[in-house]
Image 1: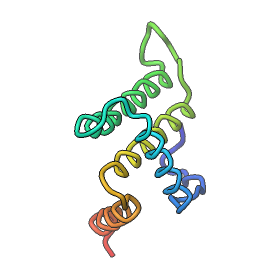
Image 2: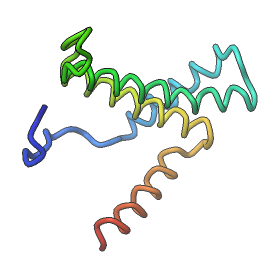
Image 3: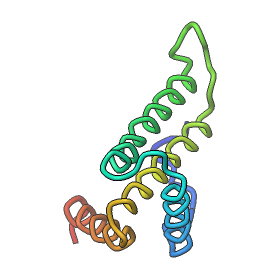
Length: 118
């Protein structure tokens, strides 16, 4: 695990390529969706809970908190699971709107203003 005081690694922020990939994933899921309509929408959003559970499982595994299992994961596994949460959330957002990039950018700006000020 990295120290909170350590600057984060430089990585690209969501770009048009990110949003094109999110749209492609959404399209793929929509074409092979066993449950559609309102139930399909709810299941796609509930998928986030599953992914968050996998983050928790990875953290427990990385810290060895389950004495029966010991250390079963790495912090890199936790990073990957967190990425899965982000991807799942962005695809769920795309399911709710045809402009996920605009919705996300607007919401991020409001959160930044509220948290960081001008």
